[in-house]
Image 1 (cartoon, rainbow, N blue to C red):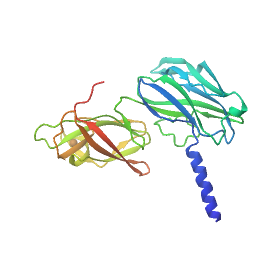
Image 2 (image 1 turned 135 degrees about the vertical axis):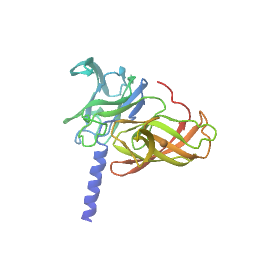
Image 3 (image 1 turned 120 degrees about the vertical axis):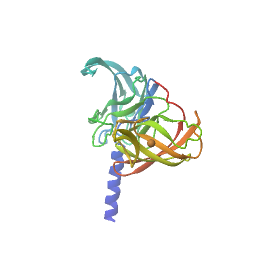
Image 4 (image 1 turned 180 degrees about the vertical axis):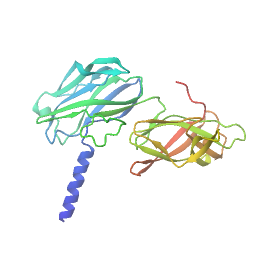
Length: 303
Ligand SMILES: [Cu+2]
């Protein structure tokens, strides 16, 4: 009986930890889009009710417009950054926009056992990549500064109070699997009469380190992951058992490099047709996942 109790308390703690972050309800969006960023606050500060939320709008977000909330006062202010944003040594911005919602009364404070969302609208940067939104949560007692950013990659594992994560996608064709692996710019090379094999190409970005461990397709008898390598001065291709996808790093499958080889084709690959592919992944713990995608046959679109 006692043991059962301990087990359920431990489970409850884990459940709380799993949702103990301020997160975006939609953690990905296309570059350059007008995006409604909704920050979900799932709990207070160690049980104390939330009385204020301050969001620092990242550099490159244009015209941030906060959504008012009944019972909360809204202030938008420009602040000077202690550490101005720079890129390649060039000053990008030393001003930053802060949006702050403050509960107008004790009654409108957000109780620990409730959740709510604080939203703003903004035009996203044209450049794809991960972005972090820093959020200061103030409570009746205490505060939490959601501002930690991993030193590399995009995994928030091990961080106590990570900033909210947003993945800005490079093109409209990108898709993200439930395991957090984004597939973009995928294409299959069309075949000519009698050709029984072809290649599929794409960009893969894993949020947490993972591996591509296999590929299958109903149009191919055999599908393999291939690499190109020099053998006695001749470029040859060879099957590899898996392809590493380091956290936050985009791995490109392209002609002359890594690629998916589709062999023993059951149909000709006609330009503009959609080819179903199943990608099999495995995370660092060995947990397997798969992603079903439809890849258009044809040459890639130039950007
Ligand atoms: Cu090949």
